[in-house]
Length: 308
Image (cartoon, rainbow, N blue to C red; front, side, top):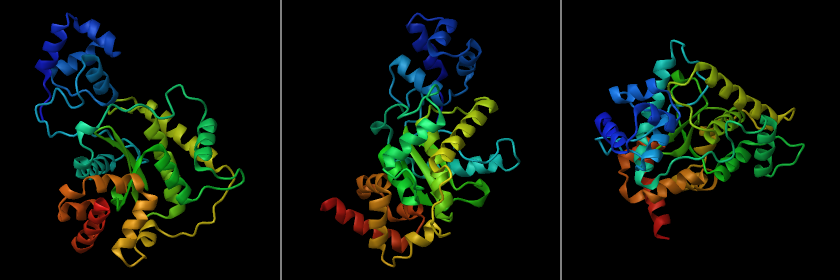
């Protein structure tokens, strides 16, 4: 992958724009544009604004057409801690494994679904969430209520093991502009439910860029936690301390596991179903985080579902 800095310069020059004028149009400083011209790759929202302003397809200005655009992971690990870089690398490796399922040619620049930087209070957002889940005023949402919310929001939730070094029950990324939350199936259901709500708020707000100020990240995290607090309030759910992994793999048959994904992780299941014919068993084994034998059985089930 190589950033085509000279092509960017030529495109801007062809439009008769100065560096200062271009910076104003994109909404960045002249110094930021200078770093792009020097070879630094624009991040997050800047890259999407640049593509939109120049009328380019997502992924343009890169020589390697196989490059995938994956945003930074959003999760609870404290930036600046000794483990942050290790965790960051691990989340990037996990997300890259799934990039083939979210092809650029079927993607489009993200628009916030509900929220924006000037959105209303966290309490209002929590009311929207509870309404979408259709739960009673005096009830606490269950893990499955939250999964239903994710489906309504169009967020792809992918269950798998997450290395302990990441220190997170879930993390959110965009892969070629698709919203994806990875959820750790080793976590307890009650904790996973709260983590998914937290990450879903990241998913519905504008992209947080790699070089954004720490203060902005802190405000984002605080807003997410406020939404979580208001979604539950003083309510307590009665879910047992059962892990998602125990629930998913207690059914014995791979077909039952597939049906479980189809019902509760429908966006993820449909994504797999759409790509069923092009995924090798070994690749599917990595994505599902299951044995080669179980992956082969899953592929047989999902392929039959495609035919039907």
